[in-house]
Amino acid sequence: MRITTWPFLVMLYVLGLLCLVAVYVAWNRWPRVAAVPGRVIGMILIMSVGAVIAMAQVNHEFGFYTSLSDLLGNPGTEHSLAVPVRPQSASGVDVLTANWLAAGRHAARHGKGEMLSVIFHGAHSGLSHHGLLYLPAGYFRGPADQRFPALEVFHGFPGSPETFPGNMSIQNRLETEIAAGRIPPMVLVIPQVYQGGTSSECVNAVRGPQFETYLAIDVFDDVVAGFRVLPARSWATFGISTGGFCATNIALHHPERYAAAASLSGYFNAAEDPGTSALYLDARFGRRINSPLWWVRYHAPEAPALYLFASGGDPPAVAEAKAMTETLRRYCRALPTTTVITGHGGHNWGVWSAAFAPAVDWLAQYLPAPLTPPVIQGTD
View 1 (cartoon, rainbow, N blue to C red):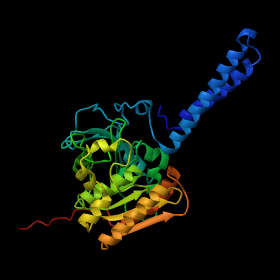
View 2: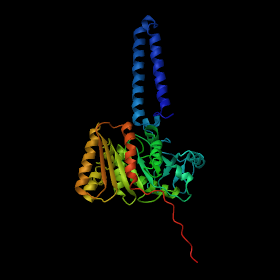
View 3: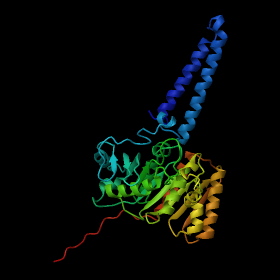
View 4: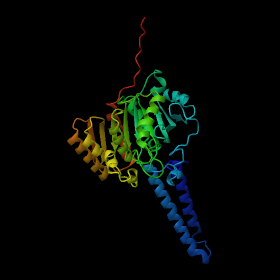
């Protein structure tokens, strides 16, 4: 059972209620000698269970850890570091969802897409991680040669791909925008962006895991090769919190692949998450080139288009968004940029859920509609 789900929370609430009832019933029934220690133990039990419930509620809200293995720092689970359970596919993407094509066709008849559980292998990076891949209804009911744009989505730290369907209902929100005609049908690519208990910041660590290569090269190329997804400049990135840093940094480094990027409550200087300084081994240049603020100032990029969001109840994110906006205005005025700062709201899934649709609608203007390859007429 995932520890971010309502069944897990309900189980804890029931356990807490049973503990409270048990202590109440036993309060005046302890033998005289055991009364004081028994009551003390009962109170400690109630407070301990209450603390666990409070932490579980926070974890449910923010999606920090999806399983006990994640909580204990063990990455060897389906929801973090994936262990291949079948031979690797030719495309580098293994679909773990059984009968996904038939299920997708059935869902498409009701206007719904299909969220697949997959493993993204990394031929260049050597990494192999679990992730999610959403295919829209049009993928199953449209022309067999139709290809779609893609949105690569980055979660925060701690976090996992499952936090997006679990905490944001990302599929429903995306399908609402598609049905309204505000965005074209698109594929969602949601990879795992770190392993173990330390953020990767989605960078190529010095003498460590090569996550930028994995996310921007391996995952990108394998999805294009294995599914009907359009190639370079037909993708955008989207991320929340640390994932906002990932979305911006990776898109800036690979403008030939990504047309636009959206950061929700992200930051723009490398090594801000605890423990991430070890990624760069005090290599000052490594920190600079992985800091979007530095990159914009010294590279003056002309792409990708950038969407920055922060909420008024999240002062650090507001400060980061303002600093990035000022740097963009000063050093690359030609780069299409939109900054949105709301008057209230904090650093949480409620804010990000509300901000998702406007951000994706903005990104969609830089993505192509689904394309069908032209018919090449033969010659005599």
